[in-house]
Amino acid sequence: MAANLDSQKLDDLLTKMNALLELKNDTLVKINKLEKIQNTIVKAWADSNSVCKSHRRELRRKCTVQRLTSKRQKIEELENRSKQNNMVICGVEEGSERDHNSMEEFIGAAIFQGLMNLERYWKP
Image 1 (cartoon, one colour):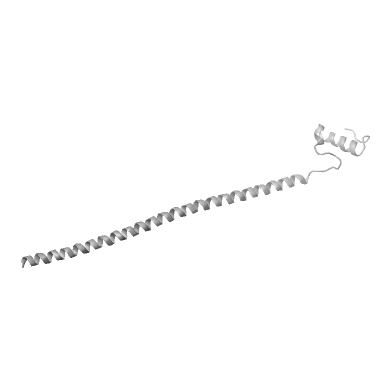
Image 2 (cartoon, rainbow, N blue to C red; image 1 turned 30 degrees about the vertical axis):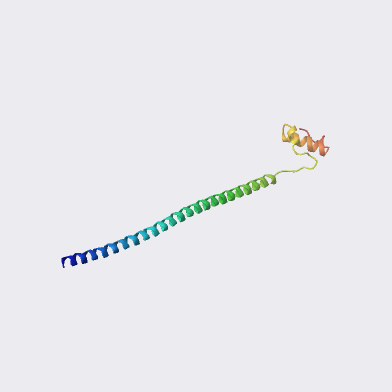
């Protein structure tokens, strides 16, 4: 009878050990699944960081283009404003004022004496 009890206890113990081995195997399977999920999350995180960096670069490029466009518009505006007060005189070559010491001398020589033949009225 003692042998029968010992045999029964051993069978119970083996059943419990088998149950523990199944739990261990289930746990290992779940750990493998969790590791795969973790690897997927890490890869997704890396991909999202790459996308963020790419997006930041694109935003910086767009901002730079906008600033350049704004600066070009400002330059054009300033150039156009600077041309508003310039006087164009037909018959006088551009840059010919450099040959004279003052604007007054240039006007007298180029316009009154040269173009209008008014030498007698112009006294520098």
